[in-house]
Amino acid sequence: MTLHGSSRRTLLLGLGGGALASVLATPALAQRAWEPTRPVQFIVPAGTGGGADQMARVIQGIVAKHGLMKQPMVVVNKAGGAGAEGFLEAKGARGNPHMVVITLSNLFTTPLATGVPFTWQDLTPVAMLALDEFILWVNAESPWKTVADFTVAARTERLKLGGTGSKQEDQIIGVALAKAMGGNLTYVPFRGGGEVSVQLVGKHIDATVNNPIEAVTHWRSGALRPLCVFDSQRLAGTEKMTETAAWSDIPTARESGLDVEYLMLRGIFMAPGVKPEQVAFYEGLMARVRETPEWRELMQQGAFNTTSMTGEAFRAWLTKEESRHRTLMQEAGFLA
Image (tube, rainbow, N blue to C red; front, side, top):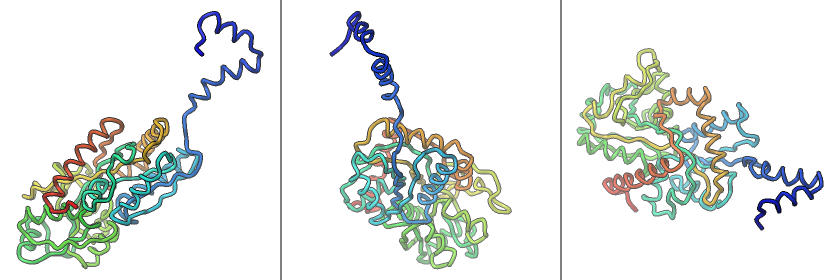
């Protein structure tokens, strides 16, 4: 029933004090923002020690340290099936606002490579947090000081390139790299970027295309050497990460004569069927996370591209990236 004019005024005047207070309080209660009422499961569809895992745990720590949420975040790694385990769990948690997923580009590559019944549209996009870079790394004791050195070696011997997963981002870059060099690279898959770095430090493989955050500790210790970054421009960081070099000192692949470029998503998604006010809560939460000094330090230490998006702009970007990955996967012969 809709109340108009004098009839509405008569009803209000006829109410007792307690009833009137109840009526007037109702809109305020309805406008109260949603927030989690139990611990939030933070799914990482990748192994421990890799870039996605490190970022999730930094976010977890920031939220706890600054009291950005009353309930705790609990990080859970679900790397099975190249991340399909984590994505399918989130897909099956329809309407559950107490679960979020940190995504990388296996959001696109895993379903395209395996045929698993999942696409990014089965989840609810929340926010792009950043874009992650890829760098060609070699052991610091190797004879390869430049991409040119590495290219000569790849043309005369079969080098081992380590990476995370099969038919995923690292192997896509590896295929493009071998093609651009006209060389031979044998791809060796591992469960996570942390393990890949350890294998390179131990000289069990010849090179990796790890994200900066996955190898920076070993670079700073003098164990690894970066040869090029797979971006259209040099990294922005000018602070010295070693005694002699900053991120900005690493040449691009194109500067080094290789036409290979790739950036990776770092984003947050929720289960399907969640409410707009629940999405809004996590959008706001991630916006506050990105304002903290700890987040800025992560972005600097990991040489991230700090592009961020939400809403329709993010959806449009996801649509475009899915199409681009389909083309890349097809060219590499990785489509299921």
